[in-house]
View: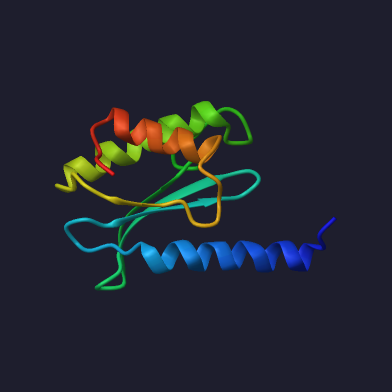
Length: 119
């Protein structure tokens, strides 16, 4: 079994590997996900300017359950897609960070795609 330090180190390596391939601009921002044990956070980032264009978390939606599950993640994906469309953003670059494309991360992407955001 891996130690916590080794696990953290491997996660950082995966994150850096993904980040090296993925970059966002003002017209096509980076759709960045952060997943904690209890909450989900999504940001649309313009890497050229170093600015966050839009950010949202499950805390903003006032969800009934304490922990953000797959259904909440899908709702969150739909919500950020709506807000992105209001700002005139149609296309994004998906940054899953160090997380596998599975579960809550996949649900966020599916929800955003359902609302018309293109990856």
